[in-house]
Length: 445
Image (tube, rainbow, N blue to C red):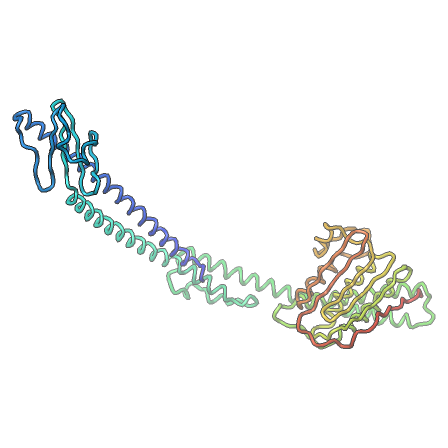
């Protein structure tokens, strides 16, 4: 794992070693400068004290003259012209002379001023070599300790990394929990990792059981519901075909039929959505225009008694390879919503090569309602229609399943526009553009 725990731990130790190296280097440098100043001041002050003690005993006591030191004395009241120019304006105390490599200590007393010049090359070299040795030793010790700690931490983390890598390669539909048994670990996992492995195994088994139960329930319930729906459809067809069936009863039978068809569409949608994303449902090539025509015919009875015109504009519908009933469920839900929330005006269905647009002149939706329109079971107005708030949620999930994104635009009092976009690279249109063709409404029975 490029951003796994071993890499993060490695970067942490590298950063720790780098910061430690900088801190140690600065510490040794500052310590060397401080030691140099203290040593020079104490060493030269002792030389000055020795000179003053000797001068008390003998006024002609000689000035210090060595390979590294040179003394100068100026009696009180005398001119300092005998001094080198660079020392004439120097005050009492220890000072670095211009040019580097020399310092001067000025010690003024009643008898005069004593100037002691010291060449610092030897002590600078001693401090430099001592500092370099200390620095190298400290850095080497830091790096060795960091490396040892890193290796120890890596051994402790390696079982977790190995476990994460194995779990990431599990098949979500059938995780092989035997791969993370403690005996399979390449390192000693420790008690914590053993408990984690056991917990993951138990969780994977429970999830697998849950998913399997959900699949079985969805499959069995959906298929079992088809049997009574088929009976209902056949029975209503027979009763509608009977000329002796009263008109009032026919209206009720038509409502039963519509409800049965809606239920079948929902069952088909649930069956598709219950399948795994990499398990393709049964598909076939079909013309989008055929699906649109079929769904428009199905909602025509809902328009009876409403001053609403339904029009289809075919600008070149494509052919798709997918489950036709999936697109039918999407279009049917969008058309049903348009009919349900449009009391007067018109509903326009525009079919183009790259999508379907359904525009109505209904009540529209506010911004708040529009943001929640795809939320399952959400309904802005529970008194409007008999919907349960699942239609748009199913439409969106089916669109995501087949790569047909759905968008809504709406404003209160100005209607709603729903657009289904198809995947790019579709085959040529089924037919050239045809003029707008209004779909006739079915008169009341």
